[in-house]
Length: 344
Ligand code: KG4
Ligand code: ZN
Image 1 (cartoon, rainbow, N blue to C red):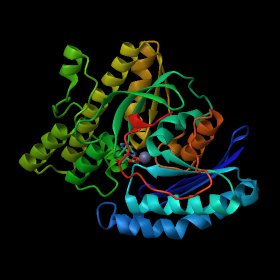
Image 2 (cartoon, protein in one colour; image 1 turned 90 degrees about the vertical axis):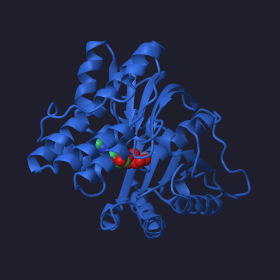
Image 3 (cartoon, rainbow, N blue to C red; image 1 turned 180 degrees about the horizontal axis):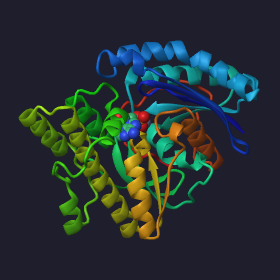
């Protein structure tokens, strides 16, 4: 079965073709970073307009790469939420129009389900059940994943997401958008033990087993530090390294604790912050010490992409739990959509 995947929830247009037996045949991505950079963040209206320009040419491109035609496609999977309403509408309406024209199902996919299943596309995939750490610009969650569609929330952020904390801290240090990768790079030049920053909600975890996260206090601590010191370039690198280490400390400790609590031994890390090298280094080392295995998507599939959406569609159809459009192709988007409400 051949699935076309369409992702337009934020600032990346991602298109992919996934075959249920042959795997990922082709994928293409257009990132809008350069366009939003001068505004210091994503401008929703510009994002929607750019998705309109990109979706069809990218579909043609992946079709060509895979040597396939539209007539070969068996279903269209698209990100239905969560995300920016206008951006979601672009992918959703094109997916439904295509599916209607071809007389095939259209499947609305939850963006985070795409992220948490994305390590299954790697050459060494995990097996169900596993614990998933979802760390993106909009979400920070620990989930117990029993099977496709069976997700139990173990903990989540009560304020900022981890990626958001990276982005805001980067902004405080005068780095551009998106801040995460730039901050990580600067951190590589600094000393992580230079500034003592808080490790939010770690103490609670040891006392009560709570697996929630909080990053806004950490960001405020950096703000106070930067205001007090007006750091030079070397001190900025030290702040970046100290911030990164504090964030990674929390993510690693909570992930290992989730494995211990659930009795599972595989951890899947997904979402943009999963591309962070320091996080990977620390997780790999500390998980191995405890006898756990850690799985990541390929680097290029850590951030938003169409491949994870096509994969989620294929797995849902394969497991018989998809609810594709039947007959009428009326559609809605779900800008706010809680993953734990996903009906399997
Ligand atoms: O999953 P994603 O592409 O989009 C969302 O669904 O949010 O994640 C983007 C987030 C941004 O906050 C970005 O700064 C962060 O992931 N990010 C990183 C790194 N690469 C991307 N954060 C830390 N280190 C990185 N290397
Ligand atoms: Zn994402």
